[in-house]
Image 1: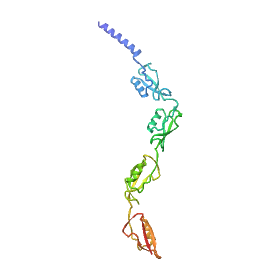
Image 2: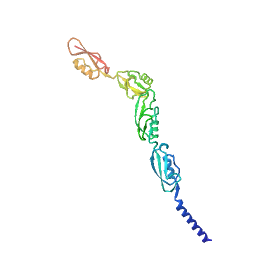
Image 3: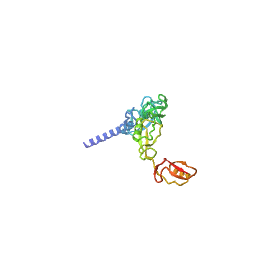
Length: 286
């Protein structure tokens, strides 16, 4: 009995060996036509096959999907063999889409889907196209171009707004004026000395009359009030020397002469008092 079992096992081994040589080293090419490239590669590699990728144009198969395989689907191939994927680049000519009114991000995605390249982005004011949406393309919509052509995009800044002048206004009033015009407001953290009352707007940026878009920001710098300067004693001094000293401190100077002479005998603000920088001091001279 043992010799018979041994002989049977030897025969079975021979049969399996012949089967492996003839069939066991082979597999069938999976069907991946129309699949996205990444999914097709994963399927083939999971079957133990190597993958090479080539690209070609197709009017039928969407860009990035498999047009064909070599060997074709179902073909017998060694289980360590290589399958070449032909992946679509889309049509060999692409029509520029109409992107007017489409938000910039979505417009760029649409161009990439078609095999085009988002190009330089510029902006312009527009009364009807919403801020951040596409106004036009270059080349213009409807024209045909090769894949990988760069498409420049012009994007709306929204409706133009002429910046109101709010210098000198109380901060609350100034904010309301600007917001009513569709602008945002930022208050600068530092205040400055100015001729304006304390808490009023001393400076604005951009300046009055600047063309902005709705939603743009205007920065307001508030006043600390006028800078106060201690007035020096110039009585008895030469008039021109007194003028020079006061002007260096930031004062305006007027001279009133009595008789003939160049000596200051009176000043409109007493020595030691404080006066706002930029204010006028009158000197009496004789």
